[in-house]
Amino acid sequence: MTAPVVSVIIAAKNAEETIGGSLQSLVNQRFGRDELEVIVVNDGSTDDTAEVIAEFGDRLNLVTIHNAESRGVSTARNTALEAATGDTITYLDGDDWYAPGHLRSLTDSITGLGVDFVKTNYLIVNGFNRKLRNAPCFTHNTALNPRDYILPHDASTMVDFPECWTGIYSRSMAQRGLLEFNPELRTCEDRPWTWRHHFETDSFAVVDTAGLCYRKGSPTSLTAIFDERQLDFIPAFRSVFAMLEANPEFRRFERKAVRNFLSILYFQVHNRGASMNHQVRSQLNLGAVNTLKGVDDDIIDAALHNFGEHRLPVIESIVRRAR
Image 1 (tube, rainbow, N blue to C red):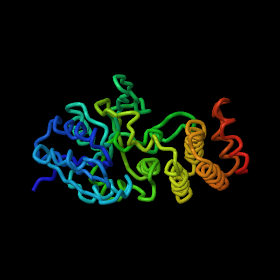
Image 2: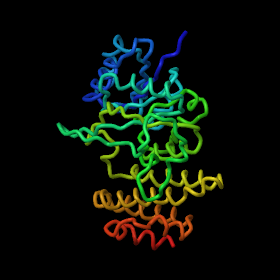
Image 3: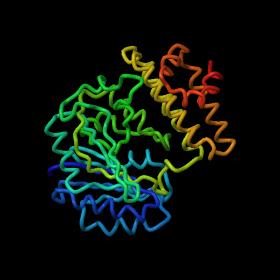
Image 4: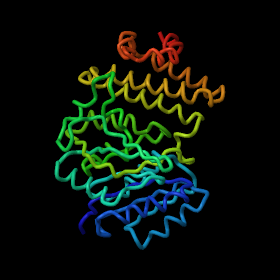
């Protein structure tokens, strides 16, 4: 039996109002029924998400997995990955959608270029407003070395574009364990995931397709929470730092990784700190301090070069405590 061209993995929780649009957009891709496999993990939903998914059983090659209790997005995606049989694999959130033909463009690109993974631009949708976010890579439609697109440390690069749903990935990556998420990470799970791709794969490409529509401001999005789950960027980057330490060849990327960490720390403190309760804010400060204590002062200083006069004071007290 021929494998599907692509498996689309969707982890959904309480997505009854949006997942119908996500699944309908998959109906509108240019694939035969057996070419497109859709694996939906209903991760402990308490609304009518399951009923909406079931409506698409006769329109899609649909595999549905129901978790009685939520196990988190990382575990949900890993569960779906185990069930996936496609030659390529991609991800879609239960509140986002594809423009017609977007997925066919991606599968043609990864196959035609012969690379391990392909990344693409996406549209940020906020009500009636649309904003294009471009992948931070000027070279498109060409096979590239992933390690060449981590630096420079003080500019946006491909490791700053980590969202798993902006890419399509080869079956060989799954077979090598490169598509598994850390199940302990509830947020920021795609940061170490993406760094590992740039360390351990041989090739990737960026293509011009911009048919993925990301819904900003969804009430079910984890980006809208202010509890301890947002602190998972701390263990996420500890795992990135561990990858760097494990391979001397990768130590040249340490300043970039620290810069990433400090930038997310700034965002959490500046944008979310006031909405966190005292306990969560204390955990944020302590976790950041302890993480930075393991980094050489000269690396921190280099990472903070050109960090921005308006940004540095926000995290200065945390950095000072870590020295």
